[in-house]
Image 1: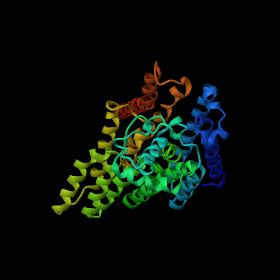
Image 2: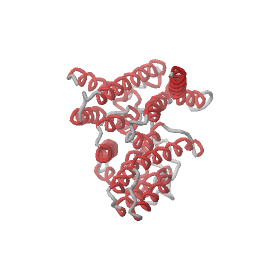
Image 3: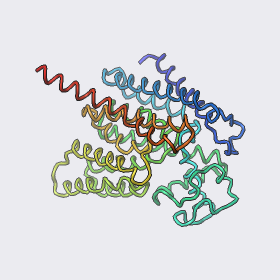
Length: 376
């Protein structure tokens, strides 16, 4: 891979990181010097820049996949790309597309600063807390599992009371688990293409390295559990899948599949790894589709099944759908970015943006299949 391509990729990521600071919240006193109001006062321009950025992101991504398939991108090259990505986006503004990271900090503060139970006490109950001015879910008790609350003491303590250090410590923690996830993807697949498909997916990068979502922590533990089961380490596999559930509960849907795997191991039967991964991907995709029953489909939820689909790149329709859904989910931010409201026509547009790329893909895929069968 040519150095010029690497340089262009690095410059693009740095530009995207700078772009993220156009979204600094006006109430975020800790970054008041960087507040411009540009993203909120120039929604049309901001939306166009974002759309162009996402398209460029996917051009790079598809290029990397092609390089990987043509043996032009080896493991060392993938590591270099991931290092460039991490260094370029670590200090991007995390609330560009989601305010969840502020919720993580607020919940951790309830537990480890105020020494209250975050499953009973809401952040909003501490009336004079400065975090309330920019935290969007301060009126809710802890939304995540107890193991996540326990883990959050690490970045919260590392900040020594400094909000910005705490903020980027949370991002750094999630990036470490992203790297750990890539480690287990490699250990299971031994395929560079699997590392590329997951590790360089723009959705995974943005939701992990920019927004700092903890879904990667949950899926790190799930993929670690799969690795241990493949190695027939039942207790390690059982512990890690339980800890995964205790991060965010979504991997509860994997329990029946994992228990079936444990049962097969106990009976000294060979575990069909490909089928195990396939059904794990389907299971997490189903809970992804069911998420509107609770609230709505959020883009970072795709990480739940993308971890598994990266392990089966030979399944073409799954591979292409993973890419089209990733693209559609990032487009899903556009209606709010452009209109500035979550109501009116925004929910309809979000749904259209989400499924339109996949619908076009399916029509193309099956039309091509029908035409090919007629020519035989």
